[in-house]
Length: 358
Image (cartoon, rainbow, N blue to C red; front, top):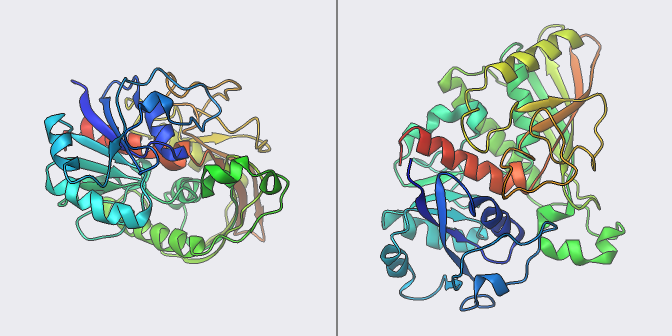
């Protein structure tokens, strides 16, 4: 498979830079262009402030393009760009992503601007990849970052048991709100707004949408009510969710373990460069520092996402307990800017490419 020329829409934000980091040596995609705001447009890409904890990779010698310029689309066409990875704010994404798709550039978006829109697949590859064939607009959407540690373990459970209710409480990292909080000592000390307006509503809507589609794919069966609340905490990276599922029939911890093992064994994504070795990594107790970078079997203390596309892509699950016969409790954890954002949307693009849908 030849590498497809691509652009990252986002020069200086965390997700935009995670995309750059992961695409620099990607076997399917070649980073040929990056766009930015007025603050970064016109600058050499290598001179844009680097926000990530890992060293800046050897990025191409290119100048950041102005997203608002009149000749932006024509410039991309002249560069023979085939694929765009979007880390844009919703309002901007709504304007530009459709223009790119209409010009023939396939868009893979982390924005919520087009999620759940008719003809635009909203996909978690392990759950409802069959929906990719329904694309009619040239845009493919990844989900909300917090949905991943909720939906992937839930899908494993729903393949074996009927779940009637999902109760979730999140503890979401500062990086989920952008890079500025990571440089705010008050926020790092816990002095920040802990509310996340609209987050619970997004997660609920996307969760029900994904699982309705999963029923169409015959990959799981779920009809459940939800009770979801979200909270920001002072951790830099990693979203933790505390789950309680009510099942129609009594279950055991051993049956839950078996369901997760079967889910891991039946994953069909292992040939994708960004697919974890196992989607779910079981541990006894989650350590939010030590367990941030999981590839499904191992944890990395010194990750290099430019070289290892699998690390940070698994969901870590622990503390599996059953109360009252049918109340399943567990914790789940994932890297919000990797699996929940840049890594997740690139995995989506890999899957689309492997299915020859682009």
